[in-house]
Image (cartoon, rainbow, N blue to C red):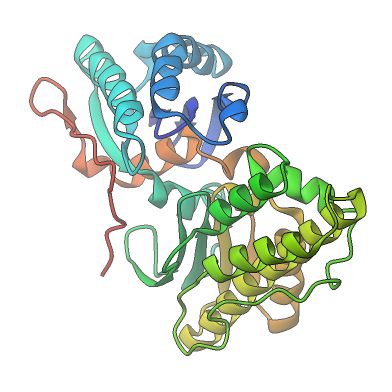
Length: 337
């Protein structure tokens, strides 16, 4: 089964062709970082306009790279949510038009589910249960997975998401947007133990997260520093902040893995690209006897390959555009047990 996936939930316009839910034949992602960077965050109207301009080109590119035409596609998958309402409407409208034109079934996908399976989609030997961590600009969620369809949320952030904290701290230091990559670059030259920032809720018995206190602590630390900030101060604060975030994420994940006696650890979402987080999780997995499965770089951010892969497992829910419309769900929650 060849699935054409379309993703437009925020500021990436993406399309991919995935075969049988695991073999990626193409995965095209058009980023909008240059458009939104000057504003310090995503501007919804600009994101929607850019999706309109390039979504057809991105889909054509995905088909071309896969060596296919629409006649070779068996199913269309599109992100239904969560995300920006305008961006979602454009992706869904385009996907439904294709479904109607080529008489193909279509299925709407929760892209958080896509993040959960992104690292495992091409693996044949996944050992369940799995402890999955979705960590991005909008979400920080711990999920226990029994298989592709059966999972339960066991913890999530009560305030800022981890990626959101990266963006806000980068803005405080005048480093630009998006915050994750630039803080990671500056942190390479800093001492991660120089400033002991708080680890929110790390001692709590539950598996929830909090990053607002950490963000405030960084603000107070910046006020203590001589102005303008020296390169040394920026690098040190960046490294110490990143260490605090990674420490919390890993400690909560390992604690949850012990409690639920899982066999495998995986992460997904934009922050999953962070090299310190990936290295730490690999190290802890080896230490505690868990198999760790990490997504490739292009499968961490919002992408269409994970949407197409999830659609293969949800194909029984597909319908035809002429029979039923897919409604955008900007606040689409994870379905859980």
